Amino acid sequence: MHLINWIYAVLWLLVVPMAVGMALTWYTDKGKSICYVVVCGYAGLFAVAEVLIVPGIFLGASLTLVVWIYRIVALVAAAVGLVLYFRNLRRAAAGALRRKAPVRISGRILMFIAVFLVIVQMAVAVIMVHHDADDSFYVATASTSVYTDSIFEYSPYTGTPYKRLPNRYVLSPFPVYEALLTRLVGVDVPYFVYTVFPVFMILLSYLVYWLWADLLFGGDRKQCALFLIFVSAVQVFSNYSVYTAGTFLLLRIWQGKAVLAGVLLPAVAYMCAKVMWKEKDKGGWPVLFCMQLAACLVSSMGIILSMIMVGIYAFVCGVCTWDQKVVGKALFCCAPNLIFAVIYLVIS
Image (cartoon, rainbow, N blue to C red; front, side, top):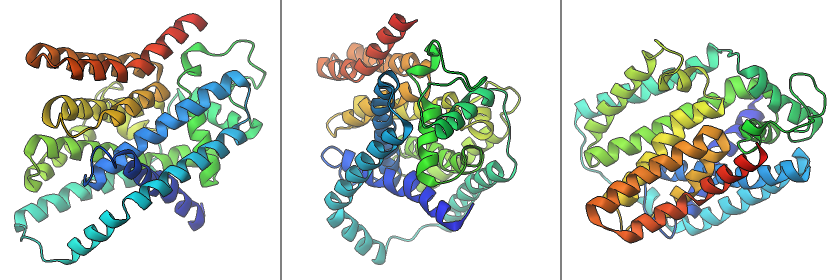
């Protein structure tokens, strides 16, 4: 993989999501951290991919067409986000040059350890590639989409045209999204899936955990660092079963169900806690709506599990505070899940 491909990877998997997150959170969550902006940007891009790919499957669109529409939408949204946040970026840069309050050495050491552990996990994911039996469908589907310039038209097992679309995957076409990103980065599918993609997904997962730490400990950096160290230890030593969140995160994060378990469900839970508990008056509902669409993209289980999670939060909030507006907004956020669940029942 050449340097230019890594530049494309950083552009499409870090810079563009951050800029899109700036646009998505501009009117509801101004002044939020970069971690929050990146997570929101990924939710928005996943949602765009779901809206583009699923209709493309039923309309027989080519992968090239979907890639170009996605590229245009993502770049326009990123440009809008950068323009809207230009003044904020200048203020942030100016503030970074000013003298800040001193940080204790113990806090710096703990933060260094937390960041070091995350980097080690990202490096191991690149150096020690794990192959999974499910890749015979997931990775093969992405490769088939790239080399036939189609979306779910050919079986990855035999190469023959589908006589009937696979019901479990047609509404959650995450392998097609990986094929789309492969086109944008400009590398082969196996290299992207096994080497490039895990780096950014592991980073995204720990950004979500950092948001949880910030929410739980009120911004105390020392406590947040300890939380990340604890989570890292749990993840690294969780390979006692193939069903743990740590196994999904560190060994098979390129699969949609792993992204659901390692990234999106914790992110959905965080957004529910944020908009229904901590910061009811500060927005965040558009992001939760995008996260529901994102959960539909990555896995058919995400269609139901993310909706159940939002429903439980809404039920508890409704019982404890009798806030009907919150319950109504939560139900609206679950609308994509309900629609895809009905479509799934119809095509099954």
